[in-house]
Length: 235
Image (tube, rainbow, N blue to C red; front, side, top):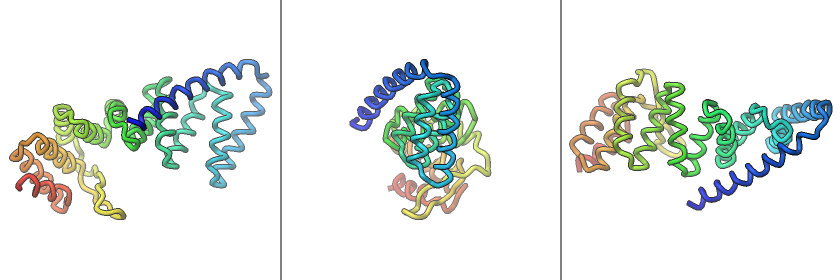
């Protein structure tokens, strides 16, 4: 809750700053604006080349303030924050972009993942759902199902997992952590079956959970998480 309050407060402050910056660009001479844009674009490119993200961000901020109608600069800033692991800032930039264009795929991806990272699952979920609707991407559908499960929206989660089990392609993989340094890749269909079992297990339906975990293991015999969950279902 504290993180969300901080996030919302920052959103309000950004909105106020954007309104002020929009007013400040009205009086600028077009020739001066073009010259300053060229200078800051060059600064951004050099900063990225020399791995100086702070300078790159500063150049992008100046470009955004000067060109509030050009979403490209905000897209670059959001991507930069995302790559730096600054999830709150990345989410805020992405949500500003989505206010203007709610079909911007890059912004949806950044908003969904970043909001999930800061624990705002209920706010991340609609972005994953939109991604799946716009792209048909099964990874986004899996993430939607997992967040629905995490939020205890079990009926929605079951609908999503069943859809994924039906539509998953044989070559689609998803990674699960085995340790701090290792990741195990399994088919996304096996992951969906494992998630289906987790949903049933949460609801106290151990027989249905057992069946789902067994089907996941049949698809991927080395699927460690499904094996652990099967033991829970059979205990």
